[in-house]
Structures are given as C-alpha cells and as structure tokens.
Length: 157
Image (cartoon, rainbow, N blue to C red):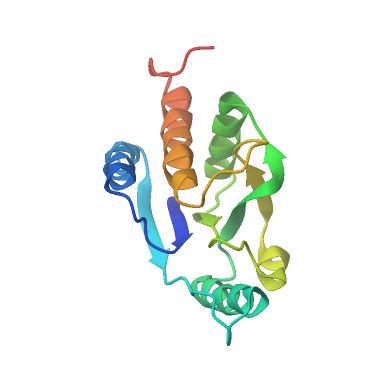
C-alpha cells in the first residue's frame, strides 16, 4: 500500500519543515509514503473564498484516481484514539487498499466536490489548528500508528 499526505499550500515555517521531514523519514521505514504539495490560491477582490475553494477543489480532484481511498483531515470528521487510528490503517492494509490519501485543505477548507469524492473524514481534535500545524500533528500520529501496529515501544496507553 502507498500512503500520500496531500497538502494545499507550502509550509511557511522552518521549524515545521524540520519536524515534517523527520516524521516523513520515520514513516518511510514502514510504508511507501509521499507528501504531495498543491498550489494554494490567495484571496483578492477578483477571487472570493468560494472561488478559491472551487479552484483548489478542481486541482485536488485532478490528482485522484478512481480507486484512491481519500480521507479528508477535517474538523467535522471522525475522532479516533491513536490506537483506533492504527487499527484503521491496519484495516486498510488488510483490505487491499492500494493508495490511501489523507488530504489537508487550504486555509478555507474543501469544496463541495471534494467532500462528495471523499471516502471519509478524520478530525485530529475538537480544537482548530492551522492547516500548517496539522501536517506535523498528523505525521506524528501516522508514525505512532505504525509503531503500534508493529508493537514497537513508542506509544504508551
């Protein structure tokens, strides 16, 4: 199985880039993994938020294949413990999912078309985080999931 973290917009902070890079290396020990960054759009008087979401959505949908399993990282998504998240990952591996994509939207979220295409939604917290910080938090949880699956001493219940 391949896992992709698809992101809208670049990370602007070096300290986040360092953490992201560290967890990316760790995750690659367990699974074929990549981070794919899509261009974000900036609001202006000629481009309201609704149009930004629509255009970013079109860009996202062009990247997807029919059999990709898409999970949106979304505040309205399902909340899982780290252990339950590891079970979710293990289930996707066992069920033969070839490409699991986790998607973090831009600053304004997802278009309706992206919500319709998604196979599920996952929330990392009841709190709202910037779309840049979510990247690092999610990668740490993905790494944690694989250490749980492998029975390695990283996660403590």
